[in-house]
Length: 451
Ligand SMILES: Cc1ncc(COP(=O)(O)O)c(C=O)c1O
Image (cartoon, rainbow, N blue to C red; front, side, top):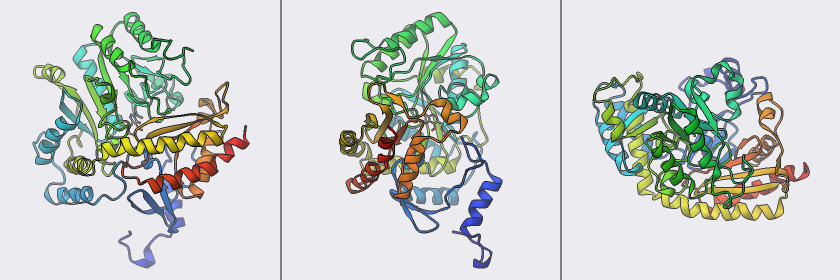
């Protein structure tokens, strides 16, 4: 709500025009950017300036896990602003101590030392620097189907085409890409389970031949690039490979953490302990910008006698930490990790049922309340409707048309190249899932007609 007198308040059109004129629209060509003016949000919905309500079927950017306007988190922000809105990172604060203790309860075992950043990107930057300082080695092995952030090291470690416009200079030093684990479109043309997860073994081959590898950086369940869930053997094997070669395993749980997959963190599905875990988004349900880089005691101990060459003015910013405490308490109070598992099954069944009526659906995959609908021109060949070069060259994408159709019907769903990512707030009700799946059912006619 504006604090200006009524006659000075901007009209909705003026808000949109000023936003377009003065701001960059991210990850896009600018010329057709016409952002909706959003004025309110509540639980699983957000509302535009015309009063139209949208069901948030992707939690914005897969981040508003608690739903919009959770009162406990809002109160924590207000209280912290009253108590101590800012103090430099060199000081101890109650919020910092309380959150740190709480994190040791909910993070995978063994992660006990924390660096607080203000985004997933920054948390990955911290992880990469810490891995390099700790190991004295340089190379990071990441995978092609991945996104790790937008700044120089994290975009260099990003396999997806958001890296391409920066090539070759933006690549940074020392990132090597491995094949992803993707059983629907295996990059090395194997078939699970006969493959004995050769994609993991190939990573070992890379480590052995590269030398100087500091860490393997992976999303345990790949997010934007298709909700790729690995087979159960993959992570335990990757852990053993890293151990054999004295290479750190960094789990990027920016999107897959905080109950999204039906566990507090996705690595819990396979009982694997990473050396470094990076997260953000759901840690505060995105109400304030917080990223976390969590490390083990072994890594922490190294820096007792070595210079920790990293920091930000906003590190451990009290305004970001207090709402994280409230978010974790709310997740516990509402039993949201369990809820994600249960409602995720319901959602998964409804989505799978869609595949019977829509030949354009190639695969439906997911875990917890984290799903992808992979759309194809042909189920046999698995040919997608659009490609990575289409995305980067600004060609209209079929999935964007479907997402636009869904918005007309009052449902937000995120689209990426040739799939949709479905990740509603963990508080979503069955009736809301039914509503959104119904809208999806109608919108998918667009894809079926394009076959
Ligand atoms: C897996 C993963 N890592 C890192 C990031 C970057 O996080 P942020 O956008 O908060 O910088 C994202 C963002 O979508 C992500 O999905």
